[in-house]
Image 1 (cartoon, rainbow, N blue to C red):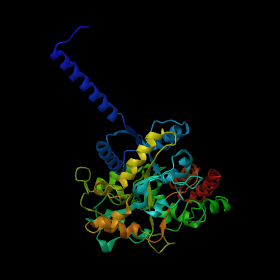
Image 2 (image 1 turned 30 degrees about the vertical axis):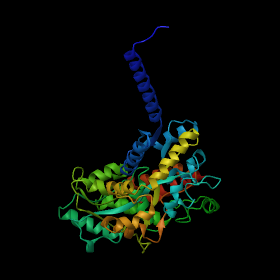
Image 3 (image 1 turned 180 degrees about the horizontal axis):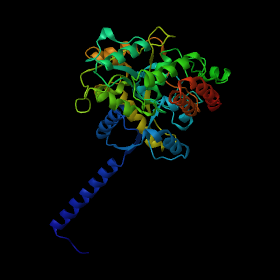
Image 4 (image 1 turned 90 degrees about the vertical axis):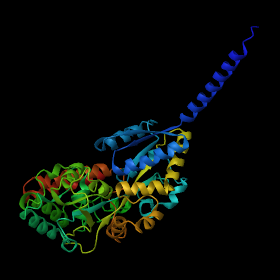
Length: 432
């Protein structure tokens, strides 16, 4: 047997020790969670919390962005193919029932006890066995934004007619190019069609504001497109675009990004957008109206006289096909995030979205004026509306509705009833 010099042995031992150390480090860093999401202020802020948690717990967070326009289709394909491409995905009330049977139950996530019960009452995200399938990332809802440099608090529009009159006055004075700008395209209907019809006691299906699937089915999934309230909504937007010209001619094709851009450029006095864009609207690097923005109640239509608001959560979900070890890791991360007060306060600061832990709302409101306003104009509104429907075929119903109202507002005014009547059976059939 050949003997090595002492120095050689020491070198070998050191090298072996380093190798073992590196191997251990590699193993520690092998833990990873892949997150499928759509780039958006609240999701970006929530993922920042994930990355902070990952750095603390030796877990690499791999971000996989997806376009909003193809998000549902892409994720549905991934879920139905039993792929484990994603460990955590953005989950929304719009497709809560579409995916419920494909997602891991999350009732055992301890941090859920701090979530707001309105968004977690089982209507939206429960599977057929009554198990919850989501962990909230925060509250998301639309708010009515206005320019404080153009409109004082005592001049704010209380009705849709007021919105027209004030907008025309500001335009006539040369203070603004448009009165109101909002998104109208499919999947962006909340920012014109939905808020204005809800503010007029109208809805996509009948009975109005009903979200219990059994009751909607008992009424044969009847569309509200032929109701007088829907005709009023369509005629309002037709007039806003074509007669009063308080809204851009191309608005029927706008998504939220295009509408937000016009508002931030200083070309409109009013808009409706997600509350999470509060920070963006007030960012001097992105917005010409920074520091000149506030929120108020939605203007009401002729059929309603009390405040209206909608409010639902965006959340995170875990695909069923994910291996058990990564499921457990994902649940631990999402639970810990519910307890991360510093991270949730930062989420609110970066977005303007009330964080997922409801116990923090009052604490934030003590020294934050915007949170006080959110509580007044949305969170504290008694008669809130669910922002979507919660059956598997809702995306198809939404598309049929969007097609019908878009046709109504882009055709001739006298053909509005005809366009709505033609769309009504398509909406009902899509539900069936």
